[in-house]
Length: 145
Image (cartoon, rainbow, N blue to C red; front, side, top):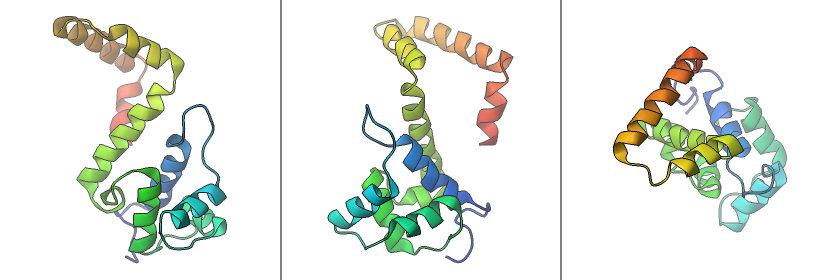
């Protein structure tokens, strides 16, 4: 595993950083490096320091070993394949993006207000949202991530 996981420099660091930024209990900020290190160990994972996690998260270290990545994945509740399999990783990224979006009160409000609408009306609302994203240049950004 001496190469980057999916061929892109910093890909591992980006994936780990995204888990830290997005996956945390509702109503509080992200986990600290120490909390994750302690949580991994409490779950029976390998010992790791906050410094080690910081190096992974910032890309200063990119070859942690499978047991560490499995333990980090377990802590954040994602499948280990998130780090290794492009298809699985893309699916988890989509789920993380949805979670991130739902933390935005306005996005959550739109989603909650859409509950109970007919399938036809939901398709119409979705089309309006897609068009608005195109007008604001957001869809092109999504495809490049």
